[in-house]
Amino acid sequence: MTKIVHETHRHDHVLEIEFSDGSVGDYDLAPLLAKDTELTRPLLDPVYFKKCFLDLGALCWPNGLELSPRAIHQRLEKSGALRRASRVA
Image (cartoon, rainbow, N blue to C red):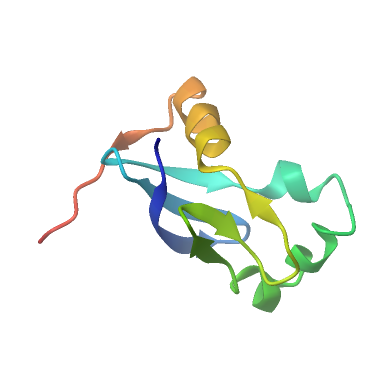
């Protein structure tokens, strides 16, 4: 099972997501936030958006919003946005 192992805020509502399989991609949450739900509305605040954290490999926020690493990986893969991570040890 692919998990998220690291996330970095890039700009606006874009996070660079690194997965346990060594792939990485920029994930834009703007389409999700445009749905304007009770769980996504707080993420429109830039300070709150940056409070994301990882829990068991999933992308989460303090209000209970949890995004599936598999779904994010599949979306990035389908759009051709995944690349190999180039982390320096």
